[in-house]
Length: 222
Ligand code: CTP
Ligand code: MG
Image (cartoon, rainbow, N blue to C red; front, side, top):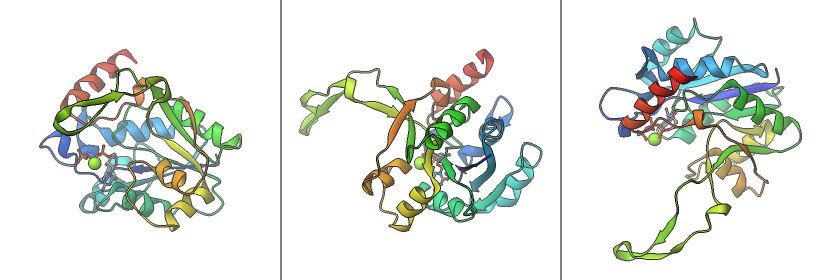
């Protein structure tokens, strides 16, 4: 394998409600992080998995994942980007491709990991999985008054894993950690072309309580 996968898992999971760090919350009896890492490890291109865990849970996460797959666990940071930076810092220079994932996208299939990695290998410096937007999207102004309807055909919902040439991601991080909601946002800012590949409905981000219900149902149909 020529791919390192970074799995930020250090978030609090506030939108999921009370119950501890989201990556450790159970889905069908197993922590979300276990579901996520098992699927990443099943992708043949993956050489190295680096998990960024909540600082207080590093040892517990090491013990949790030891039977699942060989992983390196580091302490995450206050923002997702800091967790990604901490994981990226330990990727050896000879790893050519780095994917950045979310523990919260626990059901992401190994095939999506492979297709993102393959697109980077084929020469795209930055690759993101994306799906068409299903709802009609409005732009609104003050007092929730609609300003207009956005052309939906030009919009995509973006998922993870997002894949990068190692040097491209490292350069974007070295340029500073201005707030971006995804990793591709950092490299876009650096002027690097970012290419979409088809995403997967299984790669949904478990964010709110309803998402756990959906994920539980998906586990039983896949
Ligand atoms: N993450 C992280 N470090 C942080 C914040 C988030 O590693 N400081 C990770 C989360 O663990 C998650 C992924 O980034 O796997 C996506 O973040 P999100 O879905 O927002 O998770 P949380 O931040 O945990 O949830 P919330 O925003 O509801 O608190
Ligand atoms: Mg968050």
